[in-house]
Image 1: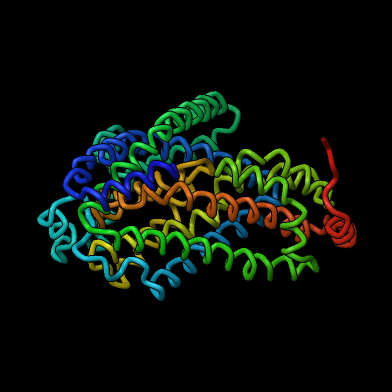
Image 2 (image 1 turned 30 degrees about the vertical axis):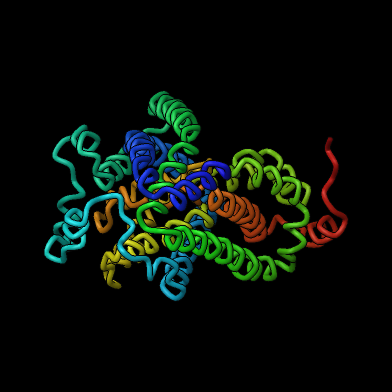
Length: 410
């Protein structure tokens, strides 16, 4: 990815006329991603909501975990929205760096095309079950997924086979995503070459600025928001980060917090969290407590609006926030998951041209590391908080363990 991005930028700088010819590489990659969005989001949300139904059966732990997940992810979305509006990393890029034509961009930004609340509600309900998938309308897919998820949760054992099939199907879809992501360097090369060749190095600078803003915001969230939560428990967020440093290196190398899931659960048990709480909170948090992904989604979406000069007033940003509160729950903690969810959200809100996300291909891989690291730390803190709420966390033991360092299980 690093080589592809550098080569794309170099070609765009040296030979702009040649660079713009590589645009199809980025567009083909985007089409491949969009191809799997609807079934992937459906499967992920169904499995997640059905699992949430199981959580409610276990009582207080499930309810408290859900409250924490929703509170933290919503706060992350709001923080990302505030920072991107204050810093404005996408402003000043002219002409609009969009992969669609000026006429198409004007059509998307036309205020007369804006949908009201009633239109939004009516449009969210599909005419037929398969119609949502054929049209690619993500809001309609989400409506179907929510209904199916709650239905499987209500059926219990009778719906177990169907739920298992859906979960296996989601694994196959994520494997398809993994295959598609192998083409990401080609897509990144094409998108970066086209962007720099057509719009100059200023566009590259704006994307690097976005990446730095995302990293800074994620760090702010971890040290301040999660730090205050740990302080309320009588623990230190810095000590916790040092305690799971080996697992964080695995996440950093793979850009996926799932790679270190088993080790994180073991570390939390070492700190005194009961296995029942860890086994319930952490895996569920991987679908419902993606703090870093939430920060990225709002910042990337508003960045694209700023970069394409697409009007995005406060009411549209609030609408975007509401949609992200749902779609972010379907973002998988794997490489490329946030990028796919962003594409789905733009498609659902119809406030921005979906193809404009080709601008992010060159730096998305590097921002995925910030997302994964923040998600990972956030899920660890969630398990500690819920364990404390349940009165089952020995704070003195946790403090002593953090001071002593992690147990070497090699």
